[in-house]
Length: 260
Ligand code: IP8
Image 1 (cartoon, rainbow, N blue to C red):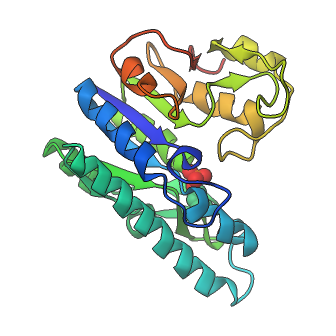
Image 2: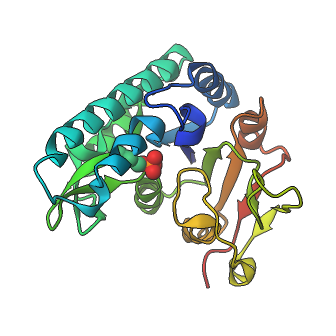
């Protein structure tokens, strides 16, 4: 059975500084994945290799003006460079892996990712080579182009490949009722289900997701089915990902039971 992991942009890059790769952290996380001995599939976020220019040029609104075109090309280049660095760390850790650039393999329609041909991803996996997808600018049948986030890719891969567990590696310990970076009395949710979701009204940004804690919870719950749980874990805390993959108890937020 396979575990689907997203390495969030906030942990693999410094989100405040354009194109800053956290190589030490990525290298350690790759070693933790290797040491767990688990079969994995990996997605990563864009962090400061994608979000800085995407915001500046309003890329997620789709094609509006010619000045966006060089920016799209630049972002595609930057996120592919980031992806090469992640794949390089995985290979160095002893995990044979391969880049599957989302925008070069798939298209979107009105921001829905169309994943018609999953054959290369399946075949690499069957060969024992880990496909690594990432948040990217993707051509869009209706909008010209749009942003495909790593979270969207995670949802599609969870549907297609039925992982035993879904893991989001971020720079926070889990989901809180308030923003833990600014509010000292923020309380961590150990477990979330659709009942907790109904009670959550607080809005703050989690990781690189702009929809706030509620949207993140919803997306995590959508990825749970049957016994599959979806876990948000802090990748800056050394050894935590390894422990989680080994089935040990750690500080994190676990979503269970799906959305009812
Ligand atoms: O970092 C966004 O992906 P994410 C991709 O997973 C771009 O949200 C190009 C900004």
